[in-house]
Amino acid sequence: MSNIIIYVSSRNNYDMLSGEVLKNINTEGFEFINVDDKSSNEEIKKGKKICKENDIVFLENKSRGIQMATQTLIDFIHENRPDCRWIIHFQHDCYPISENFFGRISKLITDDKINDFGTIGFNRLDMGKHTGNSYSSWLHGEEPLGALGLAHLSILDKAGRWLQPTMNSWLNKNKVWKEPFSVEINAWTGFGINVEAWIENIIPTDGYHFHLWAPDVLMQFLSKNCHNVVLPKLYLMNRQELKEKYDISVNSTRSAKQGNDYHFGAPNNFKLWEKRWGWDYENPKTIPPIKEKYDGTLIKEFIGHDTRSGPLKTFDLGDY
Image (cartoon, rainbow, N blue to C red; front, side, top):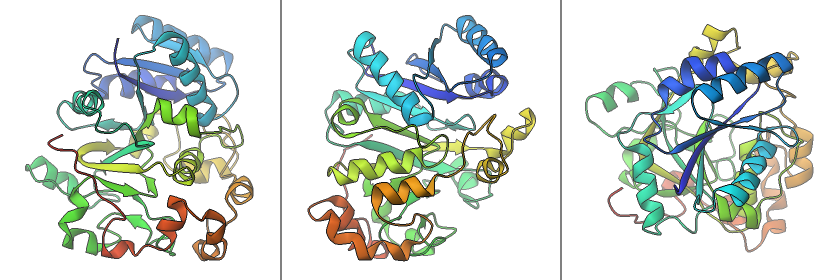
């Protein structure tokens, strides 16, 4: 049995599962599981056929949204895959490009290097839309910084809080960002979740569907003093444009706002976010006034941290 399971949550996009996901993700022999998020009957039939042909477990979400799809998977793991310690989630337009990607994570797990983290994030590249020439640099053997996550609590600016050199050139001026570091919200198009830490710390909701599900989970970990850590040497490719081949909107946020429940479900549930956390996700200046509510947690530590000076904390994980 394996200490890693790779998974996706699918909703009426099974042509993309077969046409992109199963071709782009080299599982390296680790198990891949599909969780269906209440697709149409026709799509469920198609999905089950694809999964059967590829020896993939097909699970049906016990409720709705990716948080609940993740809970569905973790319940399955608890009953059927006791050796699995981490699950790695991918959106359908995202896949690893680093050699031996899952094997390197598996070794970190085996060596007990990441036991205490809630999640692990990666160094996300694209074809230039958001990360400039980082992919070209990577192809030439360099180790560039792409999209690393979101300084949601510590940089009170909607654009400036994105941790990527195209938004913040100061990232390239400090080598410490190339070490494993703690982050408020890692790049959630692909990230790993500690199964035991989820069971101990996460209360899932069906109030988030496709959007905000991951940032909410990451905040829950910070509220319980579990670090979300970025591993900058492990690279992902995020190609949003692949969705166009399957008549799926590249901009999921805009599409959901326009009523595309078929692929994305309900749009950003900012009201639930504010009810759960006490601040407006879209207005960072509402964060400092509630910081005392989070005394003794990583949430308050990040609120008071000057991210431009470097990460809140780095970790020596050896050669990974």
